[in-house]
Image 1 (tube, helix red, strand yellow):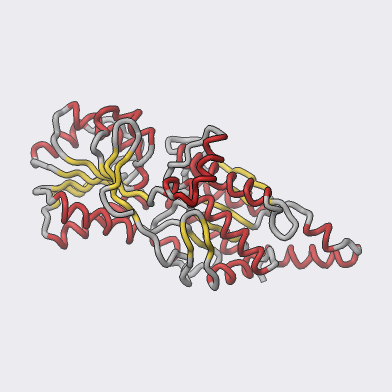
Image 2 (cartoon, rainbow, N blue to C red):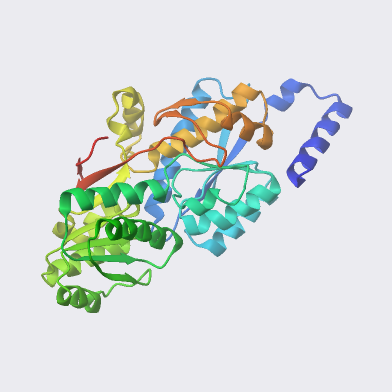
Length: 375
């Protein structure tokens, strides 16, 4: 029996001995930890998760909560740093919280997930796309977003069929997420026979890419894929434009947010990016979009609606099973489908969605985007 289940058993025994009614127990709030970057260079992604999850909690509580209990969010900052994520995970364990929405950056999510699994805590990430996360045999770990093995081929297919570059450079930030997605794109280009002249890593946090850009100009690169996040991609775009590197740039969902336009300015115009479909444009979500706008919140972020869905899946599983036991909920999640703002979600045995699609968008300098493939 896990440590968490042992604590739950002791709690029920104490309640029975004390004669406390089941109503009193049900009235206790159900705490959900929101774990992700509140600070640091990619804190905007934490904001996306937070506004999506908090909106779901608000909507569910307005409808009466879950089995008579209200949901309550507790926010934890991991700064997308693996060591800090481990500290956050241990804090969540010590705080006796059994449900987590998060983490976001794959390199932080994976070590935290190992702790949650050992301690009997249910975790659903709305952002981590690395396949390795759900290949470790865990039973309490889920995600409401697709995998790099879906996103990489979607990007590669567009590059091969539509762009048809002559010489490509594949770059990454040497981190689990960035290198993983870059490798997937390289595989697609290799299979199609498109020359990948450069496959190199840059250090996250670097701001001077002049030597790399000079190297790409020398190699006559006309297409650049960057696996990583917007701070580095923004600087690459700006400096490439300043040094007159004429190439099409593309990246994963980690680069697709308004901050990249603030960093790169006009140089962000025409960047290609793979993102989840625009759930905010779905007519069935119009009431939620209005609710976000009433709070002056932007519902367009890639992880907003997947975070909403993560909370809803947890809540619906509690309602279906009439339980708050993470193991019971995990079984319920695997054996049911859930109608959410991101569609009807079904999960496989590993905790991954059975169906999820990434869309290729053209980014505009004003922060808007145009779909280039079917949503």
